[in-house]
Amino acid sequence: MVQPDGFVETGKENMENVVDQCIYLRVNGSNFDMKDLREAHYVLGIEILRDRSRGILGLSQKTYIDRILKRFNLQSCAPGKAPISKGDKISKSQCPDNDVDNASMQIVPYALVVGSLMYAQVCTCPDIAFPVGQSDYLDIVGYSDVDFARYLEDKKSTSGYIFIMTGGAISWKSAKQTLIASLTMEAEYELPEWFFQSMPALRVLEWPRNGDLTKLLMQKGELINLRYLNLSDTDISQLPIEIKGCCQLIILLLDGTEKLKAIPKGLLSELSALQVFSRVPTQYESHEDKSSGLGVNVSLLEELESLKHIQDASVVLSTLDSVEKFQSSSKLQSCIRRLIIENPSSTSSITKMLQDADFRNLQDLFISNCSLQYLTCLVNVPLLRFLFATNCPLLEEIIANQQAGQRIIGFTHLKQLNMNGLPELKSVCGSAMAFSSLESVYVSKCPKLKKLPLNSQSGKRNTVLIGEEEWWDQLTWTAGATKDVFSSKFIPFSDFRSWSLEPSYTYEGAVMKR
Image 1: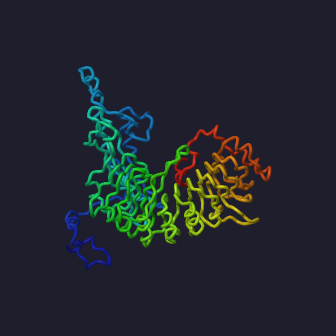
Image 2: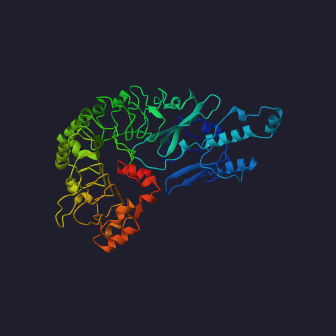
Image 3: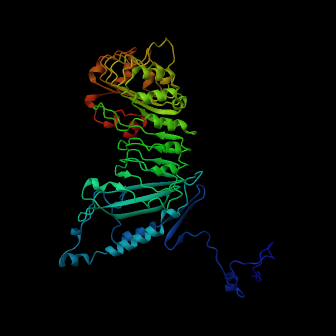
């Protein structure tokens, strides 16, 4: 359509509108006045919020919600973080069952309240909010939760999920399950087989600390764009072999998955883009002397070694075969970040591995039930931040034969030093150090340890010492100033009220407690 008189745009006189002719037809041959009201502030009761300096565009129904509260005499109600209280149980016995109750409910505008809230919910859905964060690509993160038998009559549960992209929710649901949970074991949460079918772009799937998650059901061809998978501290018992198809997966975290029987053979070697793999225990009980049950076998180590891009691995070595395989692989040694050694059958193999290994990226070391005398190999571990030696009956000294003035690189970044069940331990190292990063020292059942390698500069980070009161009383100090600094930082077991101060298998595990 040719541009009508009065509507010709300068510089585009010969152009025609072929898209929206009704604009011209409606006003053709007539003129009318228009008033520029500038930017819109309200549309259908929804306030439009702008902050161009921060790149934010938002929607708000505060005025509408305030009007609802006033209408139903709730303007003075106390705010809550959740729309329903934890532990609420829904039962038909709460419904009116006689004429008196029915009459009393006639004046309760329940349907009006629900309808008013539904309008607010629909109109200000967070999936149309302007993304606040900036990202190289659009990550989608999913969360899920389920209660247990909220409905008292049929013992069914309510489950829900939400998926978030760039800070805004794009999909969510809360519904009553069809599963009948008459026993706790029957309420184990299982995702339906079709769950991932509508999410081909899902890149991040994070489900840590969900004890109800026992299975991950997925079909071939699903989650092909997944980059990050975290199933730590779940009760998952098996990994679907279909994870092989996640050829873009970069990070796989399986910490604390004690109920996971095994990782299917050949699965890891198919994840060609994998850079980070972790399967270490998280729940340490100081009174228990047992294996974590998460030790890797030789086959899994070989698969990790075959990965071209692997650069960060955290594993448990608990057999002689796995120790020898690890010792023979410079690639595995260079990418190991958290290493747990427990119940090995050969002390000589452990000693040789620790002496010869290239631990350039090692940050956490946990050693249990090893007949070692020394851990001098730690002198040159540059990034060590966490050391835990427990139930090692022959360990006499951590760093042996330290020369005067010799710098221990391995202690430069040390944050936590934990020693438990070491009856022969007499010394950590030969001379006192600053320990500029030290956060805590935990000592238990080390009767011969009479001296700590600390000086007055070691307490600048609010370092705490945790141990038996008898052990503290027998400590000797190279300087009175050092003792004065740490006297106020000592926590005896008799005053030990917080389980959060107990050590764990790894630094992350200890921090998570706090």
